[in-house]
Image (tube, rainbow, N blue to C red; front, side, top):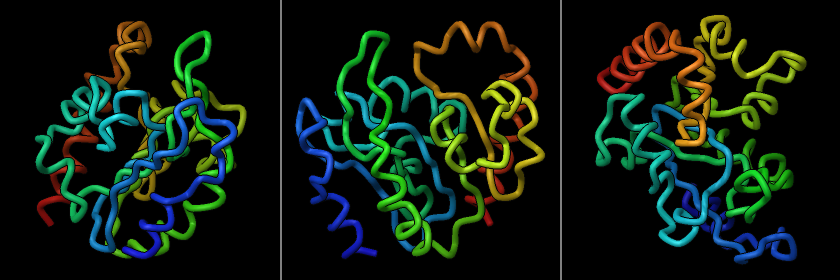
Length: 191
């Protein structure tokens, strides 16, 4: 696993497409119990090199009901984005994750985590990639019907502050889905 993570962190495959250059951000080890697959690092995470080191990460830790120390313990959580580098800024926010990363690296890294009990799919990019049989179903429907993807996957929206509108429109997420997610995370971490 260390060799693979080193290869990922030195990858410069997409260099011509990255406005700030490559800086792959990932955290995992063979003992990781829960895999979190997000979008791509934002500018702040690109600068710090620490996954989810931004307001989205604070919201995600709140949703999971875990503290920062637990969240950043690779024995507990593997933090793997769809695109490992900051993709740059677009008109409506950050650009989408680079499409080369997941096919190039995900199977390799996921194959080295036999202890993982759950994969949390954050946002539409990871859900579209991993729930291919569900094409045509939007994020809201996937999140609302999270139980049909268990025990392997748990789809949730992105915890970005930009998603306030979605959260205010879908109050059932906090009322009905988050308690189940928190319970699953608690059970896995305390098993």
